[in-house]
Image (cartoon, rainbow, N blue to C red; front, side):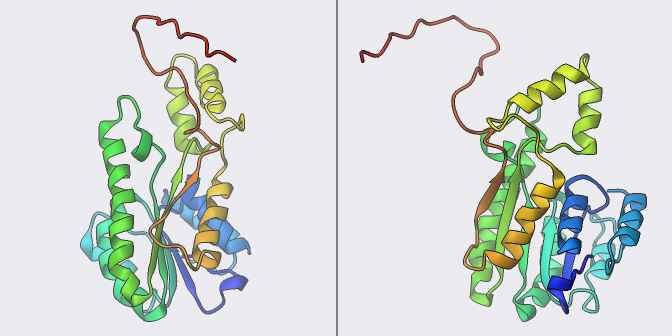
Length: 234
């Protein structure tokens, strides 16, 4: 949980807030996962409380989202936390006119090689966001999602380190964006703050935080026949 001076009397619940994108979101709300990371953020950000919760266990989620905790406002969720957290938090969010921000991924829309389960779950997060937004609109609860692209997180760094040439992997990931760099967790956090507090007429949207990675044509085929494309007359 994180509360900032701008959100006095309200509560922000960030699941997976111990590191990476989750930590970036917690910092973003606090300034305007691992247990050790969460405890560190609790000390770093005034007004935050770290609660250890296994989001795959219904009992843990019920305890985490007890009425004394969910006073109001915003929930930022990862794909594993969606069904249980949404189910148990919605009665409180309906009373407080809160909103939900789900964390999806760009690959849910464009795919990724050798990542079928991951891509499938992220596509489901985006689809669920839109369906839940429709269901909850009658209660004044907005539901949106953020789809990050290549964000420099401990997970991204760790996966790169497992490749034969980590430096080349990082360079390739960097050059996938027209902006020519990887994104930062703080930039995803800023997007979450926008959706939670400023985008009051937005529900069911997927906000891409990708540096333009999905734009334009690029080499896709692993192998094949080179076809000469005729020149278009000027």
